[in-house]
Length: 460
Image (cartoon, rainbow, N blue to C red; front, side, top):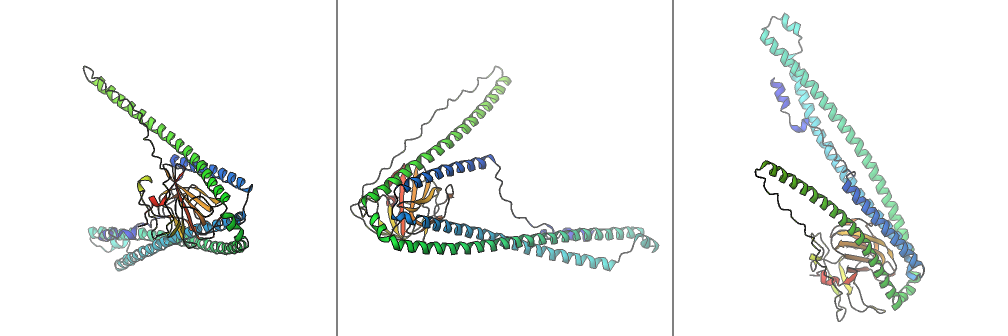
């Protein structure tokens, strides 16, 4: 009996099985299915919009359009490399977890083997007499019964321990097999990364040669007043149509939420009516039923339309040394506390004159090619495509009709529909769209109207 107690007192790590990897969350819930349907609908509408824009751009092309295919391909390859890097990181994390589990199983196995050695040694010291031999020895029957019980306990615990050791060995074998599969998957990812890097280098060289051939023509066309005005009109049309798509989705979501709220109210009213009926039946004389509360329709407070601020007297360069960080709350409440998407020199300022006519509707931040462009706040990507005049363009919806716009990127790292957090990298700096300087063109818009980013983003 004493030995049984000793065995039962083994550390938990010597008895418990290793914890398996957590399975991926189920995607069968109605809520997740509904979100996926909304995302599919959004992507479908944006894709239709993208095709219409591409079709309209074919009618009148300019020199910068010759760079379009190369710049799109560069962006796609960069995004593939970025996604492969994230996949590689997840695999390395999984392998580290498997290695840790293997080490824990090794410790468990060592403890189990040590206990088995002690058990076998005790059995060796007592020998293995059978019941007939103990009876023929003429020993005390009570002592004989205790010895038989002790020996049977040893045999039982030895069998249980052997079973645990075999189970531990099986788990170690399964972990080793899983780890091997993950190593092979990691090798495939790394090989694919190298392939994409080689393709990227080839595309960059092709774009460099093409730009050298047409750079003079690109620069001349960029400075034409007509081209700038067409680019601005194209951006305005894009924002207007995106706003309509987002408003339609928001209205559908609000309708579903209202239906759910009405259903909940009806259920609560039915419950209260039943409670009141039961009280009325139980009381003599019957108590008056509870007064019905009349739902009051509350109108949404009127939105404050933020008009474009008056242009400054002159363009003043400023240095942005900070980057966006994660933040909570509505976008409007973050005014004055946001950070510009990339570190660099603010060369073009909102409202200041542009070369070739017109005024800046956003800001241009000079930054080194390849620098990380970060989302200024949490939101959802609603556009990620090459566009004439703005190159590789990405737009994030922050809710309440606020949009942030990131243009002239070298690569777009996010897809339409992806949620992003404040401070999360969404693109890399470049000079796509025929821009001679490496940097980021950045706009903020509310209800389709451009607003001064510097009034919202602090440089201090």
